[in-house]
Length: 77
Image (cartoon, rainbow, N blue to C red; front, top):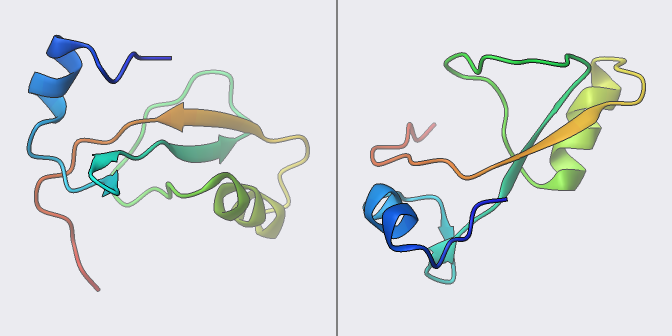
């Protein structure tokens, strides 16, 4: 996993709104795919939320993909 204290990571992540208590927030995507390309509007959330979504989609033995997302202008709905 990426070291979030790394200067390059901090420079890249600088204006992201995906934080918790001021620190980069680790999110998860659940999938049954080996290789994935994330598309607009795909789901990222806590481990529990990702697993719940996988269960709703009837994905057996989902793989959790940990990610840091740089989102500067989140879509608020």
